[in-house]
Length: 309
Ligand code: CIZ
Ligand code: SF4
Image (tube, rainbow, N blue to C red; front, side, top):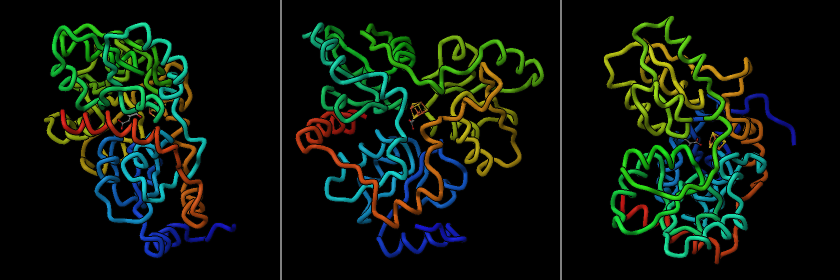
């Protein structure tokens, strides 16, 4: 298939003819964000996916997010522009190894961060996101043991905030672990009034310097409300596109990675391109599918989350 010269116009036309909705995560390239109908974090996007009357969901994000959309919309066609757009955090928790780990704690319940595969969701009791994790953990009776998966950084942060012991699966996100505490401290010296804002997937050494910690949506709200004019952003820098649109007069500086490369961009997210998005719509593939028993088992802890948050 040839790519049309005006790929944006071709995508708009396909959107009409397919009755499709394009959902894009904050970590997508700016040009993808600009053709999307909705831009959000993984939870907002799955909520949008659950309430859409479109026939086709084009998910510009990573595989577990498109899977989440499919779990909520078994009868819709869910397209992911590049099936290889995985997630190092989701991959750090393979279902077979996790099942063995879980069996060591038969009396514990499993709370999993939404950044995990459908198989891990199916092995979980409650799903959470970075916005509602603390709230959900606080609702669990104190004598009840908890396994938290897959992100050890979010897990440790939730343990501190909820003042609660949990058994942590030792997974992590390669993007949020690339920030350098040393370079962050050096950078801050050049901007005396800067505020550092961070996602809780970052390591503790980085989080201890943060003036505000929150989910991507919470970070976006924060920069709008704050009196400050300069912010260092310790999460994937794709979000800066929406920050600049919302607050053009303010300055957003990506937190520095350990190596001098663009490695704080998520390589999985960035596999999606405008051209692949067009081709996915044109060919109605690649499509997200999963066995119905896994889907139903993964849906149950998602519904628990929606009841508890
Ligand atoms: O790191 C991610 O992939 C995040 C923060 C996803 C999300 O939207 O919560
Ligand atoms: Fe996964 Fe991290 Fe990329 Fe998010 S930023 S999709 S958690 S690898």
